[in-house]
Picture (spheres, rainbow, N blue to C red):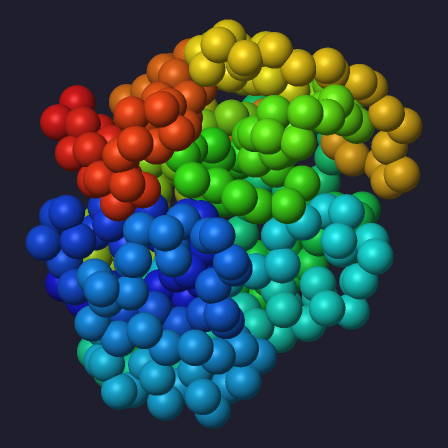
Length: 337
């Protein structure tokens, strides 16, 4: 099949491109420019694409024209402003990208007769913050205090309304947690921050070292997206799913840091710093619905996920594999599990 990915130059988008190509699918993408030193550029991912469009998802005309040109079968919407801290500093940009951009994706999709299914990726942070030890389920109320969370909740609710506008093909919503994996260079993301601290010989500053998050390897998350697509195609009905780690695999930030450092045989100074903005202390997802409605399961445990991320780092830094070689190796090994 032919997949069209918005935000294909990002961390998830690059891994998804190679996972799909490995399975024999065609992939096209629409995104703004790739960040310098990104996995997309380092792995020469443009060579694997049918069409590589550059543009802003807030430009409806350009986005629609790109979709019409390549006539994909499946649309997966990843493009977003995804940083909580940045959303406080620039709420207008966050709401514009996440709400207006998602609206344009949904409007453009209605014009593409070739589309058999559309998947809109939101976030675990769409849920109203009222649960502690329990995991959120898909029917829990949405909310969000910070601009990022509320903008994604708005995009989620808007997508649900489009589900009832007689779409020509089913629409899915994927609510995912915190993903880790090799090659991530994102700002204010934990593994890249650790690597930067090591390279700069500086202390690692943690805002919320005891904050619990649904850590999951990027390939397990993306495999969940593909299972959602399969369910949409098989049922012909729109749906909503969480995708996150197993209940036993929720851990706090400090645990991730110390395990990753152990796996790469490094030590750094870790400092707790006062947070400038409030963030949720405990965030857990319940992914039972996706497990019950599809063949999806997490192939990697929490420790496996950290180990695979560390292995990527070691393959590229110490064993001198190219990023595309390391990426392909891990995709092959994941599919074989």
